[in-house]
Length: 232
Image (cartoon, rainbow, N blue to C red; front, side, top):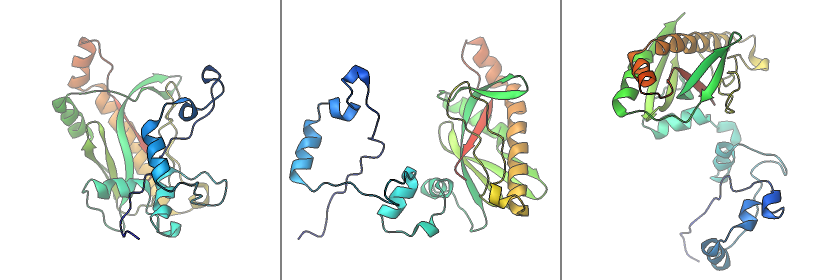
């Protein structure tokens, strides 16, 4: 038996059936000669990374597939940071983050657009404006990975047990940063939530008045005036 194989993970391929496709899923309706040929020449199966029927996020499922214990999962933010060459200590918290366009309505910040384009110089200027923040011994630093995407690194007495702020769906209000329910009494979790909340609000205020956005408005483009976070 060969000691090497090619493992193909069709991540995110599952979908719902659609009336427009004769009640088939997009995969069922698609012409897939290459996949059919690979399937014929290889071995196929359905794999439950967790309990049968348990829908794990991609990163958790992949972590288990590659032989790791779920108890050792460091979080998507940490994996993204390490993959980008960002140094982390065991005490640091890494959070996925990217720039978005926000609008204010009825005392809430609303996600207006999260698929924005910016020139390299524009992105650099916006990142520089919000790069670091410090509150009560917690330091937040945005480190770019690509374009308008990056990782926020929290350092100090911090923990990853905080909620996401990214609602993902446009025209939805941003989610408030809170501790996980079962970590509400944990000082490091409260420090993390409080510092991140303050940092994101400060970033919004700074970006709103940034010259880059004044120029974008002049050109008829959407402003880039906020950050959203996921998966500490």
